[in-house]
Image (cartoon, rainbow, N blue to C red):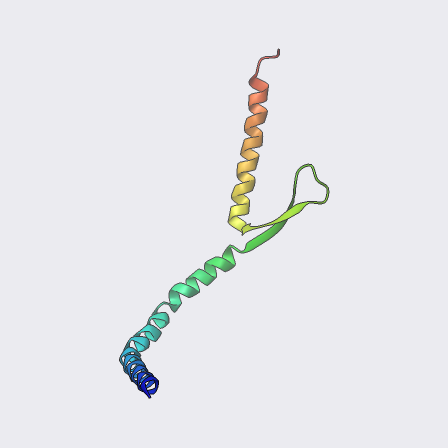
Length: 99
């Protein structure tokens, strides 16, 4: 009998809590409506800069490779950086005295 009264009190408290929380949930539903423009803008940016996945072979192995996924702009930046490092090493090699 004591357990039943605890359950009834818990249900009453839960009902009161959810009744008091309904106006907050309505405002929470209104917020995403105002933020849809921001979400649509983010979707447009994602479409403009899609994620591209490439398989990169590990050096020294013919079979091992790993899949790397980055945004297209990140791949472009990576390639630019790699190219700059190659050019820098080629220039420095030419500047070293023959020994």
